[in-house]
Image (cartoon, rainbow, N blue to C red; front, side, top):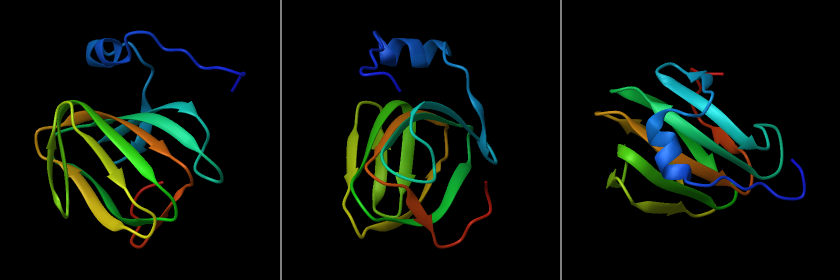
Length: 119
Protein backbone atom coordinates (compact mmCIF):
# COMPACT_ATOMS: atom_id res chain seq x y z
CA UNK A 1 0.00 0.00 0.00
CA UNK A 2 1.19 3.50 -0.77
CA UNK A 3 1.35 6.18 1.92
CA UNK A 4 -2.39 6.72 1.65
CA UNK A 5 -5.45 4.88 0.40
CA UNK A 6 -8.42 7.08 -0.52
CA UNK A 7 -11.72 5.59 -1.71
CA UNK A 8 -14.51 8.06 -2.33
CA UNK A 9 -18.12 6.93 -2.00
CA UNK A 10 -17.12 3.54 -0.59
CA UNK A 11 -20.65 2.53 0.43
CA UNK A 12 -22.23 3.56 -2.87
CA UNK A 13 -19.48 1.95 -4.94
CA UNK A 14 -19.69 -1.29 -2.95
CA UNK A 15 -23.47 -1.45 -3.37
CA UNK A 16 -23.08 -0.89 -7.13
CA UNK A 17 -20.59 -3.75 -7.36
CA UNK A 18 -17.71 -1.57 -8.56
CA UNK A 19 -14.99 -3.57 -6.77
CA UNK A 20 -13.23 -6.65 -8.14
CA UNK A 21 -14.13 -9.50 -5.79
CA UNK A 22 -12.33 -12.86 -5.66
CA UNK A 23 -13.43 -16.18 -4.08
CA UNK A 24 -12.62 -16.34 -0.35
CA UNK A 25 -14.82 -18.89 1.46
CA UNK A 26 -17.73 -20.88 0.01
CA UNK A 27 -20.39 -18.26 -0.79
CA UNK A 28 -18.14 -15.35 0.23
CA UNK A 29 -16.01 -13.12 -1.97
CA UNK A 30 -13.26 -10.69 -0.96
CA UNK A 31 -11.85 -7.42 -2.24
CA UNK A 32 -8.64 -6.63 -0.35
CA UNK A 33 -7.98 -2.98 0.38
CA UNK A 34 -4.62 -3.70 2.05
CA UNK A 35 -2.82 -6.42 4.00
CA UNK A 36 -3.20 -10.17 3.84
CA UNK A 37 -4.07 -13.15 6.04
CA UNK A 38 -0.52 -13.81 7.26
CA UNK A 39 0.47 -10.86 9.43
CA UNK A 40 -0.31 -7.35 10.55
CA UNK A 41 -3.27 -5.13 9.85
CA UNK A 42 -5.64 -5.60 6.93
CA UNK A 43 -8.83 -4.18 5.46
CA UNK A 44 -11.24 -5.81 3.05
CA UNK A 45 -14.72 -5.82 1.64
CA UNK A 46 -16.54 -9.14 2.00
CA UNK A 47 -19.61 -10.01 -0.06
CA UNK A 48 -21.74 -12.82 1.40
CA UNK A 49 -24.25 -14.75 -0.68
CA UNK A 50 -27.46 -15.67 1.18
CA UNK A 51 -26.73 -18.35 3.77
CA UNK A 52 -22.93 -18.05 3.59
CA UNK A 53 -20.88 -18.41 6.78
CA UNK A 54 -17.37 -18.06 8.18
CA UNK A 55 -16.28 -20.78 10.57
CA UNK A 56 -15.56 -20.14 14.23
CA UNK A 57 -12.49 -17.98 14.77
CA UNK A 58 -10.88 -15.89 17.48
CA UNK A 59 -9.47 -12.38 17.49
CA UNK A 60 -5.99 -11.60 18.82
CA UNK A 61 -6.66 -7.88 18.37
CA UNK A 62 -9.57 -5.60 17.53
CA UNK A 63 -11.69 -6.24 14.44
CA UNK A 64 -14.09 -3.60 13.11
CA UNK A 65 -17.00 -4.60 10.87
CA UNK A 66 -19.23 -2.05 9.15
CA UNK A 67 -22.33 -3.49 7.46
CA UNK A 68 -22.69 -1.72 4.10
CA UNK A 69 -25.76 -3.61 2.88
CA UNK A 70 -27.93 -6.52 3.98
CA UNK A 71 -27.31 -8.00 7.41
CA UNK A 72 -24.63 -10.04 9.07
CA UNK A 73 -25.06 -12.20 12.18
CA UNK A 74 -22.86 -13.89 14.72
CA UNK A 75 -23.28 -15.80 17.97
CA UNK A 76 -24.24 -12.57 19.78
CA UNK A 77 -26.73 -10.94 17.41
CA UNK A 78 -27.91 -9.75 14.00
CA UNK A 79 -26.46 -6.53 12.57
CA UNK A 80 -28.23 -4.56 9.86
CA UNK A 81 -27.12 -2.04 7.31
CA UNK A 82 -25.25 0.89 8.85
CA UNK A 83 -24.15 -1.03 11.97
CA UNK A 84 -20.57 -0.93 13.25
CA UNK A 85 -19.46 -3.98 15.23
CA UNK A 86 -16.15 -4.00 17.13
CA UNK A 87 -14.91 -7.42 18.21
CA UNK A 88 -12.47 -7.19 21.12
CA UNK A 89 -9.20 -9.08 21.49
CA UNK A 90 -9.89 -12.57 22.81
CA UNK A 91 -13.42 -12.73 21.39
CA UNK A 92 -14.54 -15.77 19.39
CA UNK A 93 -17.50 -16.28 17.06
CA UNK A 94 -18.99 -17.82 13.92
CA UNK A 95 -20.33 -15.33 11.34
CA UNK A 96 -23.10 -15.76 8.74
CA UNK A 97 -25.58 -13.87 6.63
CA UNK A 98 -29.01 -15.34 5.93
CA UNK A 99 -30.08 -12.68 3.36
CA UNK A 100 -26.55 -11.87 2.10
CA UNK A 101 -24.54 -8.72 2.79
CA UNK A 102 -21.52 -6.59 2.02
CA UNK A 103 -19.28 -5.62 4.94
CA UNK A 104 -16.13 -3.60 5.43
CA UNK A 105 -13.72 -5.46 7.74
CA UNK A 106 -10.69 -3.81 9.35
CA UNK A 107 -8.40 -6.03 11.44
CA UNK A 108 -5.39 -5.13 13.55
CA UNK A 109 -4.12 -8.71 13.23
CA UNK A 110 -5.23 -11.84 11.37
CA UNK A 111 -7.90 -14.05 12.94
CA UNK A 112 -7.21 -17.60 14.10
CA UNK A 113 -9.63 -20.28 12.95
CA UNK A 114 -10.84 -22.84 15.47
CA UNK A 115 -12.55 -24.83 12.71
CA UNK A 116 -11.51 -24.07 9.17
CA UNK A 117 -13.29 -25.24 6.03
CA UNK A 118 -12.22 -22.34 3.77
CA UNK A 119 -8.92 -21.00 2.41
